[in-house]
Image (cartoon, rainbow, N blue to C red; front, side):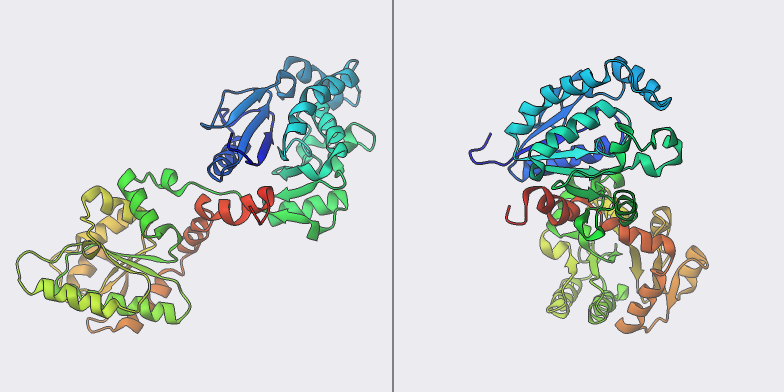
Length: 406
């Protein structure tokens, strides 16, 4: 452990090694906290150690599938407090208290509001009342707001614990809807509930290669909105300068567009290097224009495939084309397409692209891009990008757990 590192205890029924949505999110939190320099321990009832660099403490009675817990759960579902329930609560409280006392922050995923191990819930609440400011109740689900668990909606203890909050504990929900439900259920003021959305791993979800992921990080492509791709060699007939002008026009409209041009200067004309110099000059002062060759990046097929996976739209403002392979590649990736209204591109793309005149300027292409991105699927893609862990973790998760002055 690093000297002075914050000690964080993450709590759930099972560890992130067990397949499940909450476990996946807790694993991401553990990795993010570890990378931020915290000393992280996971306390659970079942599962092997995961992720690397994070300690795991297993207490079998915390597991929702523990044999004793399952027997008691069946009785509780029938409205009976089983023999041995109170003793199990005490055993769990004794077992978890030392781990809580060693932690600076205890982040409980779902156990405070779910019925899956009521003895565990009650024990946690008892321990939380001793030092509530250490605790964060990270709320993914609410048993009392789900009709499937109506048998556990009772006014007497221990069932009623699922509809209460522990004073002094920080409550977090993963959505505005869950925050509303938690507030209505418990009476906790909405403004006292933090909303921190779940994140996604864009690299894993999109299947990016190591090179593609490194490129995305280097150029901050995960946060481009939109990311425009122009996968062509640098030759004048491609009218790359118009794509640059379109980015400038979009940014003037408050749209943080990024353009990636993948190719090197065309090898068959000595004037193409001069054209690249013209493009670099034109791009001065236009934030978000990335000419990979000028950056010393030699794009290969796998990298270009990664860029298709990352991109929001293909932009192809060419003066002439012989076929238009990028149109087909974009189609395989379900990308919106903005391209010049050429007969050969209509032959390839049909009615799918948004077409612009052959002499279109940057403003016209920018308007076409905005139109192409109006599709619901394109808007959802933009929303999904904003949930990448590279944004959610430092901006929302860590400040709640470690504090804004971490």
